[in-house]
Image (cartoon, rainbow, N blue to C red; front, top):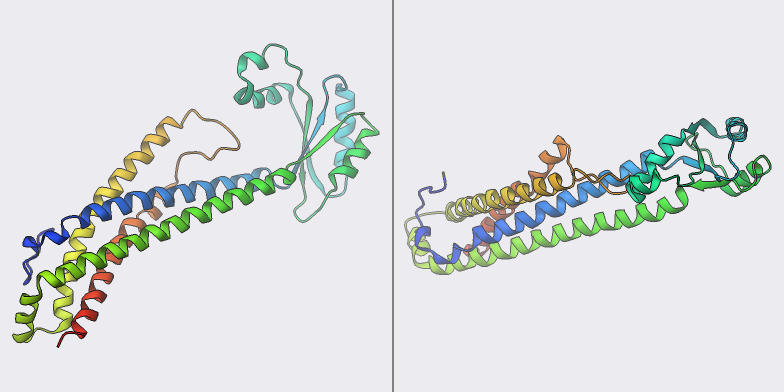
Length: 290
């Protein structure tokens, strides 16, 4: 399928020998950029789902007791806008610190505050300052951690990175278009005499353009397969080495089946861009010919 018959001697055209490699590089970089954007989007959605709309109440080690923690939980349950309250067991609270401090440090008797996780009713707003003042009347030095105060800045940063990834993807597509335009114009100059002969034999502009379009399809298909394969190997490699990374804030280096299918849009888009660009360039050039 890579060696279709053509009335133009493309096999002797040295101007196209670099196009598959250019397309391969563009597809490789484009696939990685698209995958990075998908990973960032997954991370933001995970943060938004698991952390937004929640607060954590911390009771210092020197203040905590089972009765005081229970009193705080009852007061929180009676607070307007709170949908659920859960006292986090001490073992679970210590497990949350292991990825950051290590099991040896956490297991050495490190003081860990009591934690109470509350979920807020969607659409409700609870002032963390007023809530902390009210809870401090029950247990002094209690702290209220509102995840939205720092998570909003983190989500904004992640969304900016996502937009930047798509902007780079657009630049890569633009570079691919320029490469196809240059290659097609070079091919027109090389095969000018053959094109003129085909015109004299009655060949229409659309027919000649289709010859260049098929040639662009074959070259882009070769490059797209190479670039997509290389990008897949790189992503699988990083996914393999990132299996041991466990953090609530770092995105998981894995894609869903639907996201893997979406990545096929990059090589498919490169092929379509190459075909359409070649056809349009040839048709415009032939229109200016006498």
